[in-house]
Length: 153
Figure 1 (cartoon, rainbow, N blue to C red):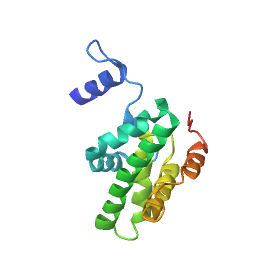
Figure 2 (figure 1 turned 60 degrees about the vertical axis):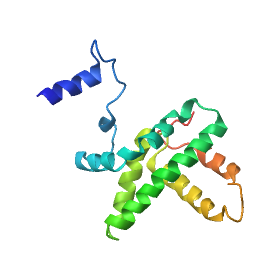
Figure 3 (figure 1 turned 30 degrees about the vertical axis):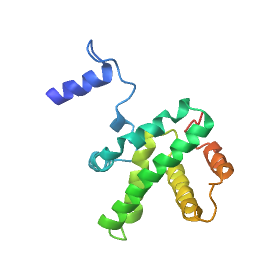
Figure 4 (figure 1 turned 90 degrees about the vertical axis):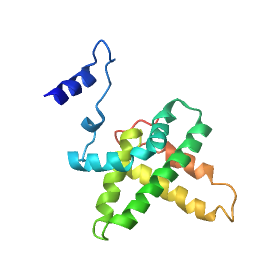
């Protein structure tokens, strides 16, 4: 009962706490409560990278790209490590989808877009020894593609 009261106060605000726009797990489409808790605990040490994804809207384009690259590298590497260490081959796709769906709660992009960008950044990291610069034009095009239901401005 006390927890429910705290959640209501969190959603509506009180004299001591300003109102919050949304409760994060209310927005977690496709994530059941247990999956949400697993994701939340897995990414707790990466709050800084998740926050950077939220701050992107208000930054100049070059900083957006830099922060996006840094954050998705850290977050994506965490996902890859977890999948390799703890998931059976039959579970990898499911958990990968759930993790990126959770990460999308911190971004204006959906999970598929974030996963695709991480894959692009990861592939370019491998080529960085040969080519010193990432192809920013391709990354800019990836960021410019709107996703249904997501505003990239």
